[in-house]
Length: 99
Image (cartoon, rainbow, N blue to C red; front, side, top):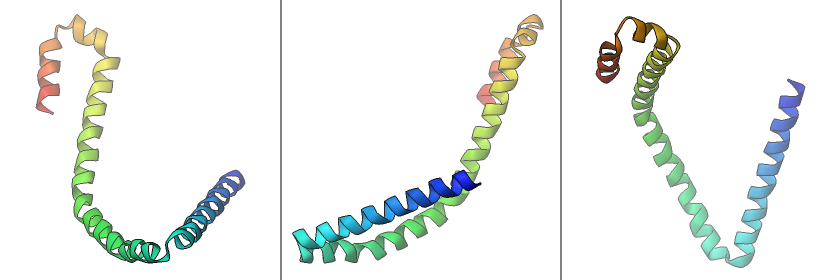
């Protein structure tokens, strides 16, 4: 836990200093352009939040389908010899195609 906290704090400080440095450079190079760029941040956050909430059910569905496919593939891989011995290759391929 201690090592994880140290890494997380290090990354947090690094990211924070990077953002502060970028903001300073933006305002130093062009204050007006920096203000325009920063004005779009709240809109971007709102849009990303709405899209994320809308997409969440599709992501969950995708994870479930991927999990089922991975389970089927692992089962067929570990039981490959048995599938061949009992001549179930076509049935196995059909099951995979249905999923």
